[in-house]
Length: 111
Image (cartoon, rainbow, N blue to C red; front, top):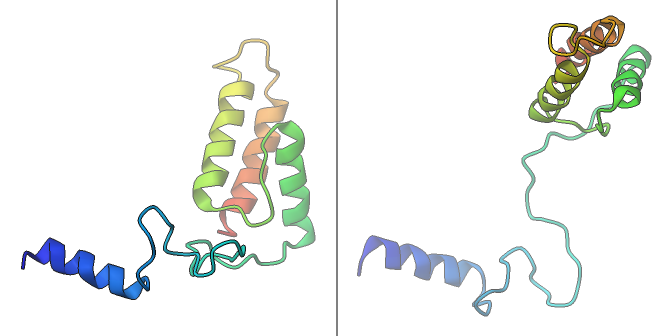
């Protein structure tokens, strides 16, 4: 038996013989279940300055939740930087960019 076929048989036996196309994370068809694992860290409560920094980023246009990841934070900051950096946008004053940079610095220490 080929190693790939043996691995597929092992996965089928672990999944309990689910029909083809059925996701392996739902064991009871028709019943909503949560995933068996998650790659996200458990959410930690934000301190007051961190909450203010998150509110500032969200008011500038970043759509972050309390349990953001490092990748989500970096992506949101880069989008704000493209929008508010004085070199990229001649109509920007730079105040929004400086505020976003300070908020990013504070929140990047958290994750």
